[in-house]
Length: 446
Picture 1 (spheres, rainbow, N blue to C red):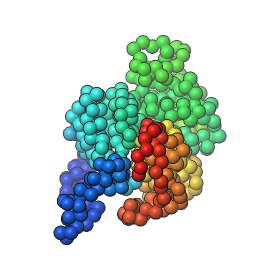
Picture 2: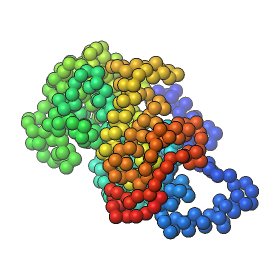
Picture 3: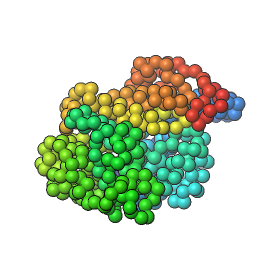
Picture 4: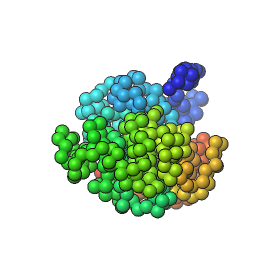
């Protein structure tokens, strides 16, 4: 970051009310009667109703639109293990994006705890407050253990965005790259640089969408992950390939896709010249990509090139996914965000870019090699991705609330972006049903 931007960022965060988020009341409480309704004695009424039937918390409180953004600051993008307090500006920023893009109220929680089981116990104790848990910037492999434990313990969606938000967006980019080049996902040869949370989750979703595991070559700091290597953890062994160790250049020979989730400037012109026809080069390290966009395009004019930066075409940004994954999950009172919902989100994101020209204040974009993903803030993301996620939640049996009319649902979603109150206008019909998924056998009503 240059000095001028550094200074400007500090001024931005400090001016006026410090930080980037706040809390505002959603009900009026001016008169004595309104105060009696909002607090004592009226507040006892919803408390008693929730005590009788706990899922009524979604009706009488903000639980159904409230997400916790939780981190211990052990692996903050580009900054490393900076600890809980120093991670707070980042978590506030994530909470801000939830509100801006999907009208989800989010509260950042920074925990001074790196021991995984104690971290899990703390989040479990906090969970009744929230409708969903977004885990953020937690080092691997702890993040895998923490997410899995919380998914098993809680009856609300838990997602580690560094894993799944990134993976969904990359999958959407690959879907559209194949649409442009005519390649089939089943035949793709993929090279992944990096073996952390995002890389493992990306490899998993690629496999779920038809890419053969044996066609995925993953590299960590010690080289290619092969079955013959010793000291591999269970996560890396999941994607260890047979055969001898190879260099990155050897792995890229004839490859269709490169996914960089590691560090900057590790690829050369010569490396990508080894790739197959019309390759997809996703250099996602920040702030410096594995290979600069301009260098990659000049070396391989036939390539589809994407980075994690906003100053080049085809930014692969998890903000295209996470707000809408949670929006669809919250609106169906889902017990989890499962693989069906992740894949549905990827296909919905991809479809938006294929639909036609997108016009924004800064861009006029038409589907092609320079536009494989929609830009953040495209309102179609809110309506189409949230709807796809909600539908997948219902079809996979993890929804506790039915959306009967998706046409009406899309209308209410758009109303959110105009700062209208969703619940005062919501005309969705929904009915109670026995909980499925993690709640089989329960008969709570909504």
